[in-house]
Length: 330
Length: 283
Ligand SMILES: Nc1ncnc2c1ncn2[C@@H]1O[C@H](COP(=O)(O)OP(=O)(O)OP(=O)(O)O)[C@@H](O)[C@H]1O
Ligand SMILES: [Mg+2]
Picture 1 (cartoon, each protein chain N blue to C red):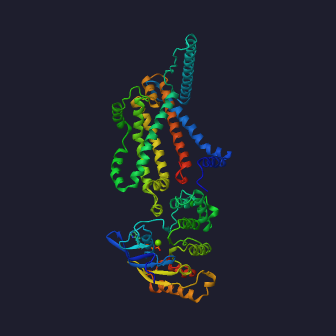
Picture 2: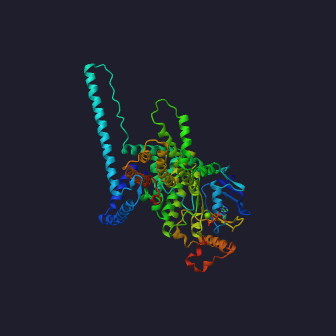
Picture 3: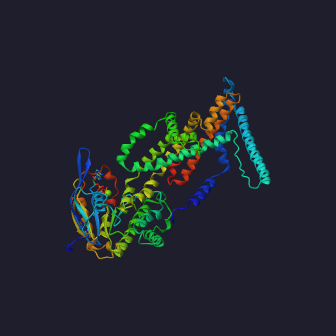
């Protein structure tokens, strides 16, 4: 009777996906993509041998694979050291407490160097915060602006001017503003994090904003007539008519925004020297060891894969939340 | 009319639309008085301004001249006491049939009914239009006729003083249409609601109406003739087929439409139309 609960919708969705699974079809569907990747790897191998840089020749797929393994090993190694360090402190604390039960003991966190995996997690955290901040601003603002023609006419030129601005242009301004305003003693989050997060937000705001405005503008006159006949209040009108009607467009905007956020983040981290994948790439570049090129390649591939996963994730979310399945295609 | 104060009154309503290079006068000097519980049909050729009249009564458009009074109060905005069945159903595509009716019921009865009462009321109204089996279907999973029925259920569920219907049965097959016409007559007799219905179908107009309002062709359309239909209620479509009074009414609407208000420019594809359509005004 009532709207189906999200949980049943999720299970329905899973069932639909599973129902369509047949092994033969899957093999056929996978043939071309697998072939494509293999050809790409082959071309890469051949091309790499012929390019020599100051750091030696470009690594081929095998070399990159090896570096990926090294980075993973390095991460495990760091984790083991961290565990040992904590263990050591615990033992020492126990000894102290044995001698003097009133002694104040504490465990200092391990402060080893950030591994590749840590950098990935940092980057994901930053992009997610920036994206959420941008969406929290863009969607309500888009609804308000989209509902009011005069406001739209006033705001539109501003949007058009700021939309194409590159993150590189925002970064210095954001850095200066953040360092001037974010002056907390012993801050919980680092200034560099705030800077890259705000930069990501500023750049990824626009697609969501523009699409939300367009979605709200496009609510059909017929549906607005229904709303008027029912005398829905402003908030009910927005919540039950405008928002659902604009949801497909909003999601299109969110997907574009998330893509931009991820791209911008890497650039921002490189420039702002805030921890994350971008910094990892930059550090390896400055490092200039014989392994650096391989590691940078690993980072490039990981960045691409994460971008892909983020996009697919948004698409899945859209399929779950949007009534208009037709608009939720790749 | 002998009543001192009519339920609904249109007085010298005129409507002009701003168009490129001036104003297009759609309506001029439309006068109409409707009593409580009366069933009125609006009939006229396509584009003459029927929907415009209905929109003015609904409050979705403001007349350029004159105005509309409901129970002595001027209509200035839309409201649920004047429910509308729209020409193109206008259902929320993301809501089920149930959800669409619920949107209206929750708004209109949010204080006067409990949650369970509202639920029963929604289902009751959907069953009235024989949509009880498709409560969870969304508009894109319904046929055109079923959507229209949900639209009717939504309007009925609002318990309006005046029910405004813009070609409510236009998209339906003959059987469903006949069935819905019968239920509409039944519902209207029970609730004694005032109904104003736009139609292109002469038989439908005669069968359902107390009075048929015939509009002249636009631009500057107005009310040409008003025909009283003095047939006993309840009416039975089969028995009426041989009733002389029924045929006289039918005849007089047809003669108004095809002799007095003949479309000046015949459509090029007219010759291809089947003969069985001769009774319907070209839509
Ligand atoms: N917003 C508008 N702007 C300009 N002209 C309009 C507008 N709305 C309606 N008209 C014109 O007013 C006239 C009457 O339109 P209306 O929709 O009321 O006709 P109708 O009798 O309902 O036709 P149909 O039977 O085809 O639905 C038409 O000539 C139409 O072109
Ligand atoms: Mg119309």
